Image (cartoon, rainbow, N blue to C red; front, side, top):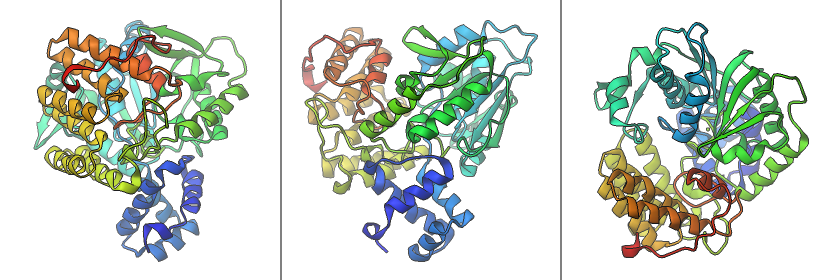
Length: 465
């Protein structure tokens, strides 16, 4: 049975019923590849495996979920949120009262371990804080419990934090016992199961809600807020911030980050406009489902973020990244190799895609791999190649900002930021941007410290940078 013969709408319904994830049409190629991988994992031919999946056989459906929604994440993701969270909660909490934290949709554990590191950095060692890490993917939870990570997961982690919280474990790094101690991994389905507890001081659920249907997301949001103690905090992904209209929470804006707090006074948890806005955003963004959670998430994310149907417009046109060209399949393999810590293989695969399809996204992946192994100059050169192919690629300009910052080239970092904001001009906040990772125009503006569409004009960088 070939990919073209698969009843993808039926598989999408099975997936949504199993874990609530509603895939957009732009990621059907990714779902087909996931189905074939699941069939191989089950040791079955595609046709009989398909019959078993459509019949609702538990093990086969679980395998489809495992392969269809593989969360990609990394340590200290969205650092502006983490810094704001530390200032607002972790350092203000009395040391005689332990914190109860829920990392919902934790994927392979990078986020809950990051939260544990933040607790230690805030001087809370020995306070008996608890981080409950949940996900619907048994495979992801197993990886989280093992606590061994490659350079891809550690690519944004500062050297001092690596030295403090990790030890070598062959070709990978292992999380130290003091980081693992407060973290408990548990299987949980955000859609089908009640919250795993009540009275949490903090619930972190990032890059999950945008992959649910409107009704499902509204119900999940209401449960997340209900699981907080009065005055407790909720953190969602920057991409998801626009979805909060109608949710009865207090918004705390700090240094480019948005945190949410459950009011002490009771009130209705969620208004209908938020659900309607979510559905509109889902349809317009059309993002792939893998960053979801593994499957419960950007990220991490389908295996091939390149499969996103890019919005048609003056700054973000379609190109060779269309799934039908083979670019998506090549990037799929490259991303899987990177997540497995095989950076050399990831770079080789991404380079093949770059040479065969002239795909800017492949050069962005090469830049991320170069940054992961410490080659900042090589990362800059790879981003410049992406910009040579697509001078108005906002995510590429934005990628140069921290790279130039690490090289001490402040003027060039400032110019890259201006160019990124200029490339975003005219795009609605909920427009999905082309790149390696799912991101909206509004989220990128927020990350760049610009909450509204920037008035700056796009200026072509010298030497395609």
